Structures are given as C-alpha cells and as structure tokens.
Image (cartoon, rainbow, N blue to C red; front, side, top):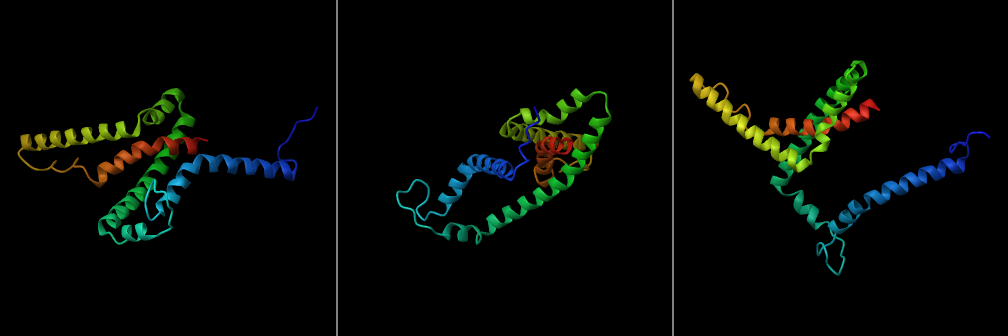
Length: 174
C-alpha cells in the first residue's frame, strides 16, 4: 500500500491550510473579542455597543502613554537585536557539545518559572545588587559603582533577554 500524502491533491492542501487557520483563529478569539470590545463607547460589559475611536484618540494624545510606548519599542528592538544572536550562538554550542541535556535545561529553565515570579525575583535581585554595589563603593571610599544596578532601561533589558532567549533558542534550534 502506498504512502498517503496530504499535499498530493489541491483539496488536501487547501483543507490543511483552512484547518490551520481555524485553529489559529480559535486560539486568538479571546484577543479578537477584547479588541472588539475596546471600540465600544460604553466600555466592557455594556448592554449597548456603539463603535467609537474616542478611547484610542485619548491614548494617542496622552504624552505619558506615548512616552511609555516609545520606551517599549526601544526595549523590544534592543531585546531582539541581542537575543537573536545569543540564541544562534547557543544553538551552535548545542550542536557541538556533548552535554546536550544540560545545555537545553539551562536554556529552557526560564520557561519553567512564571513570568510574574521571574519579574519579581529580578526586581529583588537588582535592588539588592544595587545596595551591595553602593556599599562596596562606600567601602572603597568612592562612588564608582553607584547606579550600576539601578532599576531602569538596562535592568528591564536584562530581564527581557532572560525571558525571551528560550523562545528564540527553540526557534533557531528547530
């Protein structure tokens, strides 16, 4: 008996793509619903639905929101520019090492910690590191290490890299 190929007929190929799109649509349906509700003049849970763009006009006129959006975009770009090369290097190392299980475990370990727990742990870590560096500077009698671990762009970037590198590693490895 010959092998069955799902892609030998145009119908099979089309049905496979339609099935995939249906699965993606079902998985994203809560997101689509929240997007739909976000355009309601009366907000979430209202009986009446009146389409409006007023909520988004307010967002894009708010300087604080635009500043936050700008910092978010800068963090996203920097995270991508750093994470992808690191993931490529890690995947190359994985291919060459004899310790494959340990390498995969170390690369995927952040996935086994909930994001909010990881964020809280990094917050505590960086606050304590900042205090320790300041104490060390005080001990040395200078201010060389002041501000090295203050919460800001760099600490957020480090946290995002730690959180996203397992995903990039998996994609590159595949």
